[in-house]
Amino acid sequence: MQHWRKFQAALIFYTCLPLRPQGTLDFRGIALYAPLIGIFIGGTIASFDLCLGLIKPAPEFINLRSLLTILLGLLITGGLHLDGAMDTADGLAVTDPHRRLEVMADSNTGAFGAIAGIAILLLKVIALATIKDQRLWVLSSVWAWARWGQLRAIMAYPYLKAIGKGKFHQEDLHHWQVWLVAILLTISNLAIGWFSQSIYLAIGLTVIGLSFTWLIGAWLNRQLGGQTGDTYGAIVEWTEALSLCAIALL
Image (tube, rainbow, N blue to C red; front, side):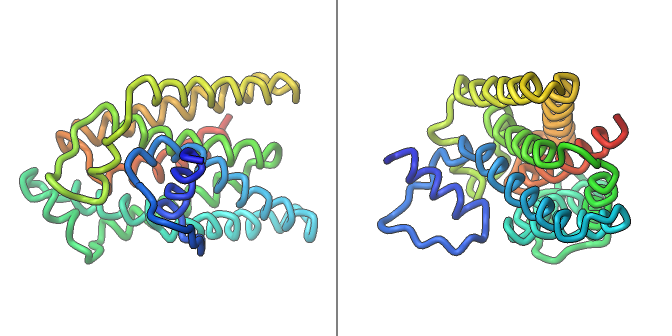
């Protein structure tokens, strides 16, 4: 029951689904469930994509399918992570390191934030449009690994603000839990690859997901000296976009 309540809290925090749970929810430690939320979102938009493919199987329709699929993912999250990626881009555009957090906290979107948001969406749509097979598996895996990157950043790097919507994520989170989730994601990919005779894709999804989450989080930490709720969103969005690009190229 406790895990179900935490999962409900994670769904409410990370999505815009109209859920009305009974009682008071505890949001501490919900980041541990973020990869599971990623599987849920990835599976949902991939199922929508599959339905579109059944309705209109023509190859020339795949671009529109991919666009609608990515937009559905944006709708489910309410743009939570994309907003963080855009704010992070605005902050990094400032040459004075001491003003970056101030700029990131500004609710107004600057030119660099808008460019980053457009680039992320374009990369996702174009990359997904070139992936013809195993789209359900690819989307579920990429969306899960992207959120594991957020989980790792919460564990590994200091939080830069004394208060903030991302501060409580560090509470009730242990190192062994983060790595257990990574092991479970890896085993799941390998199991699916084994049974579907696509072991090379399984290895590729795991290596790509783990690499991008790690590198993006480390790069942002080096630029800012830590993490914020906005950078957590940036890790998710850029991992999704770049992972899809890498999978499309491979």
